[in-house]
Length: 459
Image (tube, rainbow, N blue to C red):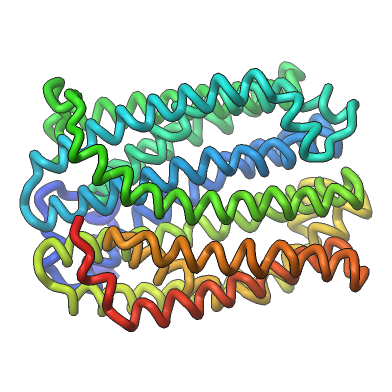
């Protein structure tokens, strides 16, 4: 027990001089995954906190507004995840090769790309916020309720993208504990301000959006402080911010595939919400609450998957592909066990979870059904998540993009509409289509991973 406690302390504290390509695989997985799981746990709390305070102090219409906005904002998350994957893959490879200064140059160019992209999205989204809500099927009353939440969330775009990409860069360098601390700081502030703005001051969903924005800004400031100090392997220098054409092209090539995967998924979620909007605001609210709870459990699982991506990148850089493969399968089995426990928990306690947020009968029924149906596919989803991230960690992002396109656009969207409308399964048909597409994605990812073609990718 004393050895485990010491290992846990080492994971939380971090060590910038630790070489994850030479220590035991199990130790490397533990030291990387613990802070990554905690980081994703707190990242998930952003959306969950907003949903909780809005549901408690604003009502069903407010939750529906948040749900419609978040379904569109996920496109921003997709671009952020794409750049994050590229940053983590490139930096992990440079660290594995012991080329730390080149990793710093890559990071500076990631920051430039993130900032420019975020500003463009912020300007577009702020101006067209009301039109976007109407396009998603919102009523005039819902638009009036949620337009400022949408505007503020779009204005947050540069900060959202930077928070993701800087965390990914730190993870790629093996500095998972530093990435964890930044998200913890941002989230604690977000929850505190949610309570102040929404519960105490009655600012509604606008207050929730402002709280999230402030929390993320502080998180980014902390990350930049760390990256410009002597603590990080990726110490940023002013001269690194001179754009490097070849570095930017390399990052964008990898990011295109990674972002493409999440854009494909996000676009499919937009269609899912659009189909659900047929059945009313209470169905959307139930789905939104269930999705927040699901994200709360899935993002820690992404922490495990991210540790696999880091180990793949660093071990390929160090010329140890067999060690990379063994690390990935070990993490996949751990993730399956974790997600199985979560699935059982949802089957047993889904109703109390939803009631904690909203007691409206239709909201509860939709949320409970969503949790139970999606939990049925958690085991295969756990495997697909880890394997896909491992392939991305090698910088080989295009195959997974194709797998996502087939799973979510060719299969999920038509199947969701068919089950919901033609078979009259309504919202439950949408939920069933999600687990079918996730199972197909996992199958294709495993087949490709076993081919070992991802090992030949040059980053």
